[in-house]
Image (cartoon, rainbow over all chains, first blue to last red; front, side):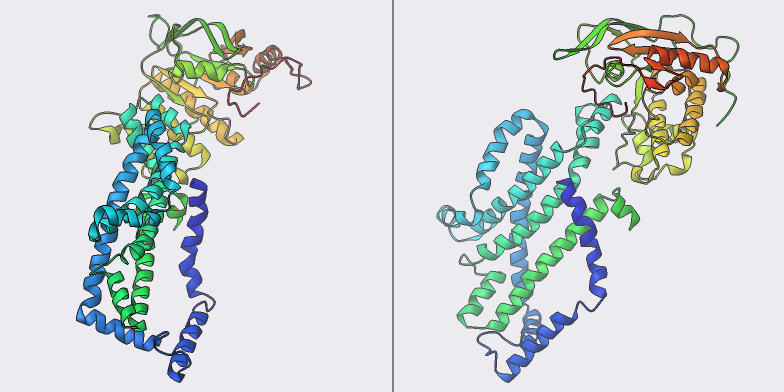
Length: 269
Length: 266
């Protein structure tokens, strides 16, 4: 796990520098221009895909009317509620399994079993159980985010350098102090990797969950737009989903820079 | 740092109120392999003892037992309650700043001041708030020494603490350890495979072989010890006991115990 984190770190930090260099923005811009040109000349009909300029206008009007912010707030609340449950349950289970052998014996097989079931396949069952309100949506997100949190935190706890634990013990730390000063900080990098995965998964599942008869939220906007063949609105919503993903990634990166300030990569930067 | 380290003429250490360490009839087995055979060791208060041996001789096992890292159920192992280990790899917690590493496990209100004092003693008062990842090998080992000293140990256990350092840094560390030992007077058990190091530092050198004390040598040379004739004599004697002909510098064909002790350096 830790080797993955180490490998990821430099590349993700080199990315912004890359963008500024060597005209990497040229090809997306050309694509955008070609798309606009295609729409204006009628090669790309509006009912297939709205022009970028039309999308921008729609975006602005949806912001001004409050339609986009209010629905975005609903979607965000769903994702965050699901993530909060998933985080709490996943972290709780990982702590129980990671810190005690009995806990591992009891919990880990169940979690591995659960992993074999694709979360989205549970959708019909959740609709039967919870109806079509908010509960199945939040539950789906929670169930989906439990595993990345659990797996990464569990392996992070188990991967803590045994020599450091030994040293801590030789300096008179008791079990609780060992967990607080050695085990948990040592598992934090892996946990943050799990959190990053979980954020991505929560958005992915959000998109699907919002297709379940939503009366508000980005998914609701998309469903309505589909019925009226408003491709401009659909594209606006897609852009919003993409921005959410970017924002989530940035959030975890900021968290990492704060929480892992002791790492050589962060010390130098 | 390179202060004259000759021992004071009078015995300034604690009077003979019992030794700091007493190990009797101590046998330790891992599976079928007997690592320590019926060992008897005493270390006086404030005495600096070096334990010399090849990889697999059981020296690390003995140190871990004295440190309380390995349990010794049903054995006579007496050691001070206050003891501290300096490991070969400094084992600093990378997520705690230097002074917090030193203060690890300390209780009380003035722990920062105590950590600061210990770090000043090892010459690192300017690195209090540094992250361990930014330290050099020698600095990390000095922090590790400060972390041991701040506990005011009656027994200081050094597990090949200088093995990973370059030769110059190692000499400086020798001076530092001697000056700290002179000032704080803990009993010291230095585990090492380096005969020169043992002769340069210790009051007494024990040679551990196949889990038994094969030889011991008392060294009365004044410190700092120059590499003179007397030094060479002792060195050659110890090497001979380790099965190395000092003249030819080739190892004799002594059987090594096949014991996975985690030793890296032969």
